[in-house]
Image (tube, rainbow, N blue to C red; front, side, top):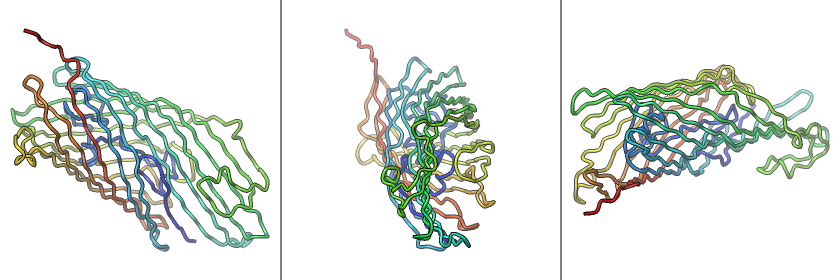
Length: 425
């Protein structure tokens, strides 16, 4: 048996053979800051940055803050038999807006990818009855999230909640090509459409050791939700022998075996709860070091394809260093730049061929400040975020696929002061 892999466009900057399972590849909802710091954020809070990992953090937003980023993803996949395949795409990441409502109370809203499906797989094997069998698999699409969240801080404790409206669809196509003149080929397509609400909760607690050193402890919890899924399925025999991006409309039908596209079915599936915790250390407002752990139980989840779902676990470590954010002069510009680095390791919630799938990588990033503004005695400003990520997913063991990828994240964070009360002499 041979396995050939190559990828097609998908949203969220994630193409992967492993996106054929479950919801696809889950998107981490990162901003420019968290991307450069290894997708950390459970225990991070800032008056100038939007943090989507913990809704409690928006309590500290002091200015109207707008964050947008674009992600480029280059991937190379190999199975140990065929020539490695590669693909590059680009997609829009998170768009978010945060505003302070009152003192110690803020809110944010935005749009972000939730999951992504994008893969092509070909498999060839011999059967005593059918002869040579060529299976072609293709998947595309994904789910997005419109979110609205708010956080409030009382003394050292912040709490927050974020509601997410999930919407979108993904499609899985399968074409089986058999010996010409003996058997007809078969084609099937399964499409899953989502429109559901989920809820995330979070809290953070500050501990001040002294005037130079402080800590934040954070926790997050995502509630278990019953999601409604609309499903359509087509099964037919065909003379088609190539699986194209538009096979759903250009397939050459010989006979229809089953087709419920005019009357989609509905089912309910359980989106599992998750929990996570983190801690961050802030030294002199120059150095931030943070660590996150998150776990989500998928054992009872079943949607697409045959595999065993298990607990997904992630470990993330990040740091940010800003030598002197208030330094002046062009000659000191490098001191105002924020330098970021992160490490991450994850056990994906998949067991295939009795093998658990892992994903690990390293991130580096920078925040390049633009012109600073001053309101009363406060300095604030916007900046450009630039981040890079190199990682590896999967394994060559157990006839699986190993993927190496490189991502570039380019974003912009804009800060401004709204609702200024004018004073006249």
